[in-house]
Length: 302
Image (tube, rainbow, N blue to C red):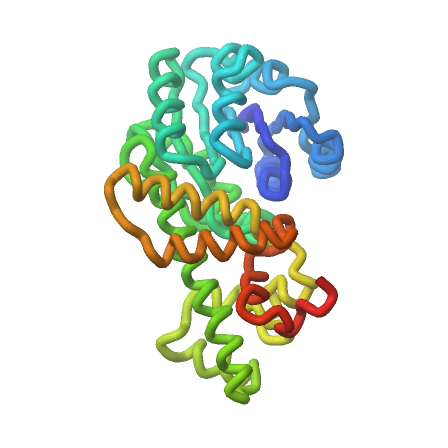
């Protein structure tokens, strides 16, 4: 079993580290948030007070951070991973960040003698808790193979996506598709309701026909239809609007980089921006149904 440093113990990092501890690894965790540290300690993570303390003697370093700027600071700052981890350490970034930053981190890591993979995840908080996340892993083949040994206790699927940054590319394309699906579900749900269809009856039709998709099966934005939907819980976040907006922006930035227009992704981004403008940045992104019908079921108390 290995000594693992983990930086970033938020909604995803916390349950992910629990699975590493259950697998027998020693996990030293660092987060700026004291409550996150305390929560991780409850399932066996050893809290530490700095990145330097976390990475000291660690065989593997995981980072799970909100944005590219946070990942950049964690790795390249004066108190960061590159300054304090031993050369040769395997570095696994499971944050969802822009491709450009991921590429810069790969290059700097290699130049300093580290092994680095970008390994973002899909599956949400429930998948993190269940150990069923899908990891999209980009990097040199030998580093990807080594990373899989440590990722395994947290994963339902581990997919080698290709060279450096391809994990991030896969993640932002996948999330972009999710947000477009979610917009379609919201529009379909509102129209079906206005045309007199019972929500569950319409869902039963769509779920076995051409409207079927992951967002419909898992995050349908009407209460009382899908158990896992945030609509049943006052739209408390499983995937916060602010983070969804950030990820949709990453897709648009990537598209601009390669000269591709994404009209549906732009629509989803704008709809998420409207939710943020209306004060719902911390609510679940499936609340976009409110943009179409402010009186949609489940939104009464918002």
